[in-house]
Structures are given as structure tokens and as C-alpha cells.
Image 1 (cartoon, helix red, strand yellow):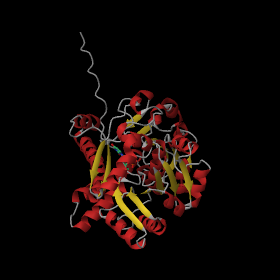
Image 2 (cartoon, rainbow, N blue to C red; image 1 turned 90 degrees about the vertical axis):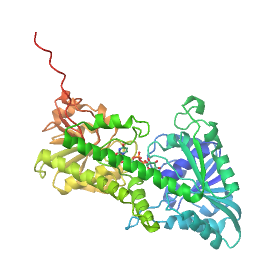
Image 3 (cartoon, rainbow, N blue to C red; image 1 turned 90 degrees about the horizontal axis):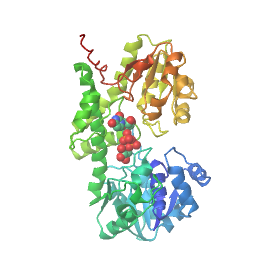
Image 4 (cartoon, helix red, strand yellow; image 1 turned 180 degrees about the vertical axis):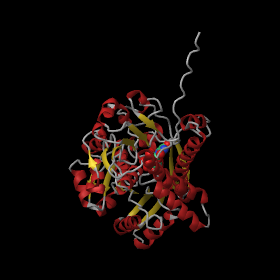
Amino acid sequence: MKLCVIGTGYVGLTTGACLAAIGHEVVGTDSEAAKIAALKRGQLPIFEERLPEVVAAGVAAGRLTFTSDARAAIAAAETIFICVGTPPDADGKANLAAVEAAARQIAACAQGYRLVVGKSTVPVHTGDQLKRVLATQSHGRLEFDVASNPEFLREGSGVYDFFHPDRIVTGSDSERAAKRLRAIYAPVLEGAFTCGWHRQPAAMCGWKPPAWVATGITSAELIKHASNSFLSMKISYANAIADICELADADAGEVLHGLGLDRRIGSDFLRPGIGFGGFCFPKDLSAFIEMSAELGYDFRLLREVQRVNTRRTEQFVRKVREALWVLPGKTLGVLGLAFKAGTDDIRLSPALKVVRELVRLGARVRAYDPQAMERARAELGGSIHYCGQAEEVADGADAVLILTEWPQFRRVDWAGMRARMSHPLVLDGRNLFVPGELEGQGLEYHGIGRRAPRRAAAPLAA
Ligand code: UDX
């Protein structure tokens, strides 16, 4: 099928490239001409595992192209996916200017029948607004259906998530739209693809048929908000439990493990730490709270989720201050700047929030991140020292802080780091280690909600 993807950010580029990988002809377009020019040169604007290979394969097969001529891309496509950004406004509501602009563009240059699919995370009833714009602006030239097809792609593993989704949600109110969406996703539903993540046929990489969830448009829009808010709530819950563990002298690792084994709860998204960040959870949460208020529901539960999350970074900074007392003149080694592992994205990163606050309080920060250095430099400028490798952050450090859960930080030379530090203290904001692991290297270690390991009882003297 001929598809057009408007917006080539994390969602649009990943979705478009993967749709090409399952056999469709996809044209990606973006209002940022420089982004399209770079994509045409084979340069991706984001770091996303396996995506460069999937894009290159699509381009080489002639099924994936990029153009800044949105009109031509829209005119030639049967189905148009709107994947533009919906950044938060000052009041927390999603800014829908780019969604409206995309709809106007479609109305201005498409003729005949088109299926217009909203993928951007939007407030409930955006589908109705899209219909209104398409109807009023196309002056009868356009016959259309609108559908909502929320994305659940995680940054860093978006390619994996496309090929191995738990469910595919499509909301529409016409049989024609529902049928077409099912046909578009048929290869993923039937396992008839070569996985872009594993580079193997579906049958060989653990593919399981995803649930096909066909709903009305409004329900589909709500499923996305309800899912992201629930996951945020789970993280804040885990963080609250970790706080209680610290107060009660219990171990959050043990408690959350025991909790998550209940299949009704599940062990995913129960990792305590310095809180959730990124461009989805925080903004989707405030958008959902605002949207619920507009509908007449005061979502206090979610406001508390937000409050718990905001306090995470503050509490961590307080821990650093308690451990080091006076911050001016102290050197802190920081491992991790991205909002989570596997991405170069620093938008609303809790790690960056901690770093900014420590700098404000007078500490000298030496930082390293496997992917986010360039973006962090653009954001933090000369306020911190940027290191070429992980071990360098330890030079003269009064403490090393782990702020992003990159698994490779487990494998750095911690004994060597210890030798470079002026004080052997590690404060782990992501519980990357369990208590007892680093102490063997001569380091004092503190995680989140953790208790020192229980010593094995000494053998009784004969
Ligand atoms: C999220 C959703 O998972 C995805 O389905 C949606 O479409 C987009 O938003 P993403 O923002 O890429 O994806 O990140 P995710 O992996 O969900 O993590 C979000 C944040 O929560 C990160 O800062 C991460 O470090 C934090 N987190 C996650 C925790 O603190 N604890 C956990 O147990 C899990």
C-alpha cells in the first residue's frame, strides 16, 4: 500500500521505516527541511537501536523515501499517518498546532478517498476535530475516514516494539477504515515478516500474534492515555514503596520482587529510582490530568503520581548533600544523562535535572553518557565537564552518581574507578547494582530503598 508519514521524529521515522519493512511503499515528510535533507543523505536525526539498518534496507528496496514536498507525498498516498509532535503548553495541555497544520495540508492537496490516521498522542475527541478540519478545508474534494492508531513504541526499542507488539489498537467508525488498517498491519498480525530487530523471520524470533483491538476513535485515544498514566503510576508506586522501605529498614528490591510476582501486578515498571522522564510520560500525564479536568473529572490520583515523581530528583539531591555535606568545591562523577538507557534523548531527563541542581548548589560535575553527550552539551554548555569514557568521571571525585540505567555501567572497571576517586562513594539513583556487589571493590554503595546485604551468619564455634 502507498502510505505517507507526516513527521519523521521518533514515532514517525520508526513507524514509517518498519511499515516499509513489512512491504508497504512509504514516503516520510517533515516540516523541518534540514531533517529531510539529512535523511536523504542517510543520516538519522535520532539514536535508535537497529533503526539505521531498517531505514537503509527500506531505502535500498525503494520502498522508503523522504521528501520535504508534503503536498506531493500526501497526494500520492492512500493512507496518511499523522506522527507530528504534540509538545506541552505552559498549562500542561498538549499543543495540537502541528496536528491541525497536518490536517489542513491533507485537506488542501488530497483528492478522492484517503484514510487519515492519528498516531500522535492527542487528547480525547481530537479525531472529531480532525474530521471537522478535513471536511471544512477540503471543500468537498476529499472523501475521507479518520482513525486513531496510538503508538506504544518505547524509545531505544521502538523497532522491537513494532514487530513484537502486545496489541495493535485501532479506533475508527467506518468498516472501510478498519479493514484497511487491518490490511496494513496484516504482516505483523500474521507473522509474515522478517523482523527488523532480530533480522530473522518472525517464526524464529519469538513472535507471538498480537491482540487486534478495534474500537471507536474516542476509546482508542483514551487507551493510549490510560496506558501511559498507568505505567507512570506503577513507577511512582514503586518509588513510594522504596521510600517506605528506607524508613522501615526493609529492602525495596526484595519487596518489589515479591510484589511483581503476582501475575495480576506484573514485575515490569517496578524499578525505583530518580523517577520517570522523557517526552512521553511526564507530558502525557499532565495532558491526561488537564483533559480529565476539562471533562469534569478531578484526577487526583494522577496528580499524586506527578507529585511523587517530582520529588524523586529532589530527594536524590538531598541524599547527595547528606553524604557530602558541603557541595561547593566537591567533585561529582556522573554516569548517565539520557532519560533512560538505550537512547540519546535528554528531554525531561531526571538525570539532567539532578545535574543542573548539583551545579546550582556549587558542585563540579564530570559526566559521561554512552549516547547523549552531544545533546547534553547543547543543553548544559560549559557548566559541567564532559568525559570521553565512563572511568574518567571518577578522577578526583568525592562521589560517583549513577543517573541512567545503562547496563554497560555495570561493566566499567570499578576497581580502577575506586583508585581514581578521592572518596570511594557510589550513589546509585537507578539501582543498577544490588548492595554487596561494589563493596567488594572497596566502594561504599547506596541505592534507592536498599538495605545493606544481610551477612551470612558466622559458623558457630565448636
Ligand atoms: C513510554 C511508553 O513505555 C511507550 O509505550 C509510549 O509509547 C511512549 O512512552 P519511553 O518514554 O520510551 O516509552 O520510555 P519507558 O521505557 O516507558 O521509560 C520511561 C521513563 O520511566 C524512563 O525515564 C525510565 O527510566 C523510567 N522508568 C521506567 C523507571 O523509573 N522505572 C521503571 O520501572 C520503568
